Length: 232
Image (cartoon, rainbow, N blue to C red; front, side, top):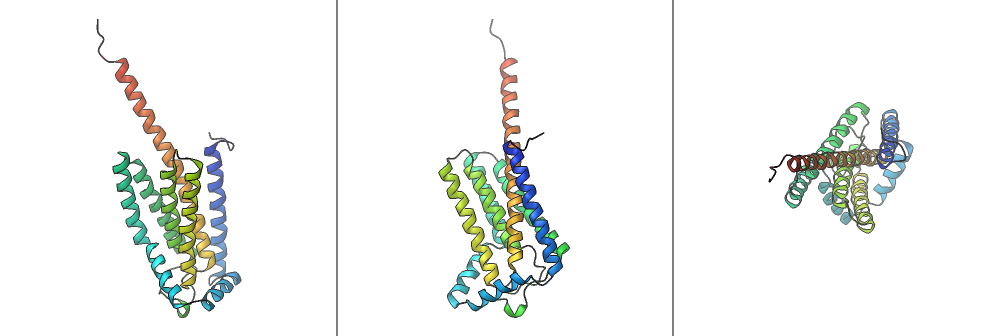
């Protein structure tokens, strides 16, 4: 059993904390149904600061963070990592992490049933339930787990740079969803939390599978050595 002081225990505690916050936000979104007071204040401010060129940039970024786009990127990343590392494990974990995050997001949308901002303020039409943001969930899950895979056994500087890249990509997509008027602040925060949980669980799965694979390889090598032919 993992102890809280160990890395695995700390990961489990962090995942539980993020999951708890996610559930709390889901309750808030369900209760409010049409956005909280803070949600409306943020949306109103963004509507007042819309500009033509910003709208174009926002649409490009939000398209890159769409469920279809991140799914294609996940498959591409998985194939590239398999080719570079001669192992399907990292790629499988990447695809599985994104799939789990997306499935949970879709299920949560149906359960919470929160409404999106009015169609009159949406710059791109979205009609499905609002909480959490699928774009933000998928972006956080995909970019985060890729950063985990790439950052394994790397230095602190590299890991910090990867963490900054994950934050930048996730925040950029979250801001575009708010700017385009298709999500509330509560929704994008929920997407960040859900994506974070997916990354932590994906990283834990990667560690466990990698250790198991190495252990099996080691036992096979030991068995081959001990049972090999003896020379008189």
